[in-house]
Image (cartoon, rainbow, N blue to C red):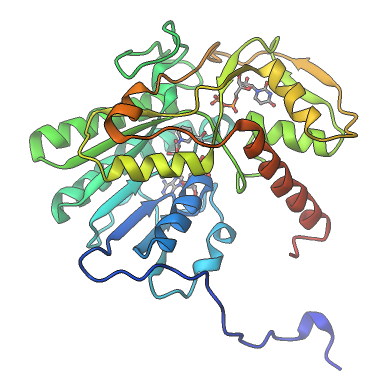
Amino acid sequence: GIPDEMAVPLPTTKSFPSVRYRNEETRKRVLITGGAGFVGSHLVDKLMLDGHEIIALDNYFTGRKKNIEHWIGHPNFEMVHHDVVNPYFVEVDQIYHLASPASPPHYMYNPVKTIKTNTLGTINMLGLAKRVKATVLLASTSEVYGDPEVHPQPETYWGHVNTIGPRACYDEGKRVAESLMVAYNKQENVKIRIARIFNTFGPRMHMNDGRVVSNFIIQVLQDKPITIYGNGTQTRSFQYVTDLVDGLIALMNSNYSLPVNIGNPEEHTIGEFATIIRDLVPGSTSEIVNQESQQDDPQQRRPDIRRAAEQIQWRPQVLMKDGLLKTIEYFRAEIDRNKRGGKP
Ligand code: NAD
Ligand code: UDP
């Protein structure tokens, strides 16, 4: 017989999740930049199931085809390998502009590129929106508040950002992106939506993302020490990815053009968070270790979400613990898959 590694797999008929039927009038053409990433791929899923036509654009810096491969070949779905730093033209009704590295190690890896992606990339998407009269939603961030001196953070707070610190490429990049959105709205009448996203977690986070949720879960699953940067008294508030996706869609389809916080106000210190995750994995023997604190690490963060409730009728629904259990299952399966050499 033919050795396994030489056998060519036969083409199979792929079966897709069943999507809602929509007629021309209600079906939208939607561009999602960063569509192969963590948040982008969940947004692709939700909008595909809802019967829209989706173009997922990505340069695969941190995104992976694997996150959206279940749609490849579906008539409503298209994947485009492109970098938003270069112009891109397509006829669409809505643009979710998510393309940008998001975790601190990824955005600090090439700070110049991070700034280019957030400035030139946003200009290109706004130029496209202007030309085809699409609505554009920017995935902004709670990082625009920097290390906040107001707690919790309402959208009216202007922030406290170090322009020359290691996080500046991302924070200032997103702040310029917001300013660009507002300028194109004022000057060119482009319809804009600005989502200030707070820390989000869930399945499909990158394994080597370096963010606290993926780090802690992987450490706990592998019985390795849990690494707390600094003394662990800094706080974050974590939302589950499906809540975020619901919020982004609600905001896009609203008429509201000022920034809106999308996050879950359930706030914990990073020290508490380490024990919460360890307790969710019975039998883990991970100990907690304190490492050097990170420069300019925001000391507290919690969204004031009254505006989202009033303007787009959105509130988070998923309890942090329920979301964490799903995420732990995802990483457990990923670790097993990696052990088998990446095979499913
Ligand atoms: P992610 O890294 O998984 O996704 C980002 C995607 O953008 C990746 O697929 C990446 O390959 C792509 N990308 C990066 N640069 C690009 C470029 N120049 N051209 C084309 N594609 C490019 O991160 P994520 O968590 O899914 O973040 C999505 C968006 O949400 C980002 O804009 C991020 O700033 C924002 N956000 C995320 C969080 C969070 O906690 N996850 C919080 C605040 C804001
Ligand atoms: N953090 C930590 N250990 C890790 C990774 C992160 O203690 O292994 C801390 C980090 O210093 C920060 C918080 O967890 O205070 C959240 O970090 P993350 O990178 O997830 O997101 P961000 O700082 O962008 O909110």
